[in-house]
Length: 153
Image (cartoon, rainbow, N blue to C red; front, side, top):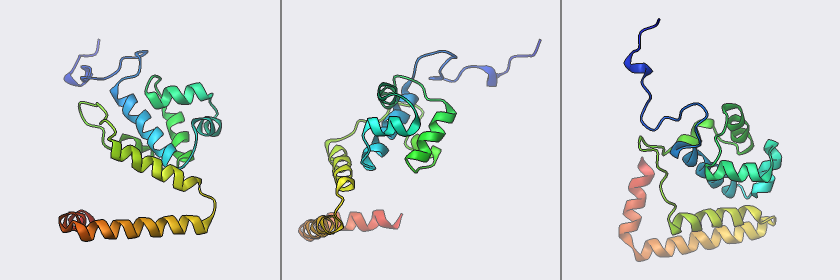
C-alpha cells in the first residue's frame, strides 16, 4: 500500500470529485463574464460559439457549474485570451472581489463601444473621452501623478 504524504492531503478550499463549484469556479465565471461583456457579446452569443445552451453559459458565469479544462480552452479561444487570464486575481482565499460601480460602468462603456459599428462615431466617442480625461487630469494634478506612476509599472 503506498504511503500517504503531506502532498496527498487535500488543500484548503480544494474541491472533491463530484463536489459543486467553489469560489475559484465563481472567480473564473466572473472573468468569463467580464471578458464577454468587454467584447460586446451576449450570453446567448457566447453559448452558441462554445456549443452549449444559454442556461449552461449562465451557470458557468455565475460559478454554479464547474468548467472542464477542454471547455475553458474553447472559451479562451472564443474570447481571445490565454487560459491563464481567467485565473488572474485569484487569491488563496479564492473569493472573487466585488465589482465596484466604477468597474461595472467601465465594462458597460467597453461593451457599448464594441457595439458601435460606425468608425466615425467610435472616433468621436474616443476623442470625447480623451478630452474629458485631459480636463480631469488638469483639474486634479495628483491623479495625473498617480497615473504616470502606474504607467511605469
